[in-house]
Image 1 (cartoon, each protein chain N blue to C red):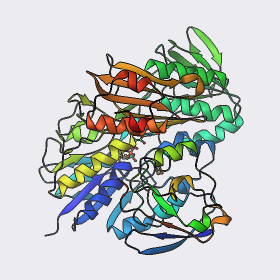
Image 2 (image 1 turned 90 degrees about the vertical axis):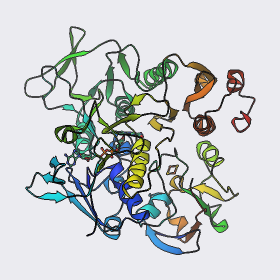
Image 3 (image 1 turned 180 degrees about the vertical axis):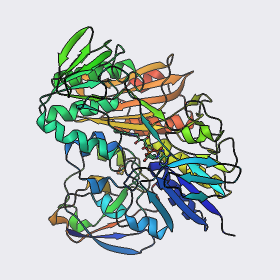
Length: 402
Length: 106
Ligand SMILES: Cc1cc2nc3c(=O)[nH]c(=O)nc-3n(C[C@H](O)[C@H](O)[C@H](O)COP(=O)(O)OP(=O)(O)OC[C@H]3O[C@@H](n4cnc5c(N)ncnc54)[C@H](O)[C@@H]3O)c2cc1C
Ligand code: FES
């Protein structure tokens, strides 16, 4: 009997899994079920070129239709998986169908964290995760004068940069004392706050939003006990993994589906990859990553394990963000307590911050500084030790740093 | 639309029409031409879209940005005509361009 693999979720991880499964010789049947109306697409441009209008929708799709046909992969779109029966080994779908599997990959990604304050459902309050979200937001850009960005994370700041291009008045409300606090170090937070201020963005730090106000549509945002008039709001306060199905099926979950180094869940027939998972990172700590790299690499390792060629996942995480003329590239994971080494000058809009843990290069944050990023990523992978004085010395080219 | 010819490392050729405004990388990915991984989707962040461009076109393709130049520095099997294909925008001038793929993108 031919082996059957089912993938739940049609996103970045699913596409990689299809490619790797077939490249590694999986000859059985392959079915992907996704609840969005679209075939798998890239999310990063959603808050960048797609929002600004520089990229049309067709370019978002990760693969042409021929890819799925050639891979003999059935794509069931616009239908959610509603339950997993691990004993009988089938996935129930919202349209009443059920899909039998021998091995299952859960790649359900994540969803936006919703803000729970009065008025949060008013028209004019937007989120950004899907094509449909951008298609709703972009027309509003053209008819609005001001936007409140709720949450100063990288998605909020990318939207702020695009909104300035549209000449909207932009204010960022951030509950913490600095922007992108979960993703970058304080040096970077200060730098990005300054750049956005220079571009005309206003910041209200240490300020949580208390309510959205308006009769029938958004008219004001209540924060710090005052009402601030706005005709548009974008909420970007983080995401939550989608482990719901896995949890209901009794798989070990804790803020994400727990997977081992081979991307297997607590059921050896069930694997998981991407935003929906939690795993032990390279440093042994449990982490949940929300980035393209993790979706691609976990999907590769999951696929390898599914075809009986397990190899452990140990790639260095990497990530980027585009704001204005600035390309931020990050490799590795930052931790409080790391020794930070600045290389270059933030005022020149070209610099990097290296993070050393017990003398070993653990992470690099590079702004318009590709050599620092690329070499840094390599050093992190090798667990290299480099003297802080050398890293700080821009007279030594990155190529000769170690 | 411009015609772009992609040559795999094995020598296998693919000639396809790519819409102007797209990148040379997108032309390959959307036509299922193997040999370009493009993990970052064209953000100049992964260097897995390395190609060698036809000498006849070197003058017609806009120069590399600093970012592309330095990202490329770390690609495998670098040659003087190496480029990151996600950074080459297809224009009518590039009609007839040939790009060759390196042995590996990693
Ligand atoms: C606006 C934005 C900007 C981003 N920018 C960057 C960036 O610059 N760099 C970077 O590295 N990362 C970025 N990311 C993150 C990156 O896009 C994600 O990490 C990546 O998409 C994760 O891939 P995935 O396959 O795990 O999930 P996804 O690509 O989200 O795919 C999961 C799919 O599963 C579907 N699904 C969920 N539950 C079910 C169900 N029960 N049944 C059927 N289908 C289901 C979902 O609807 C979704 O379509 C960005 C994300 C967003 C939203
Ligand atoms: S696609 Fe990633 S650098 Fe070109």
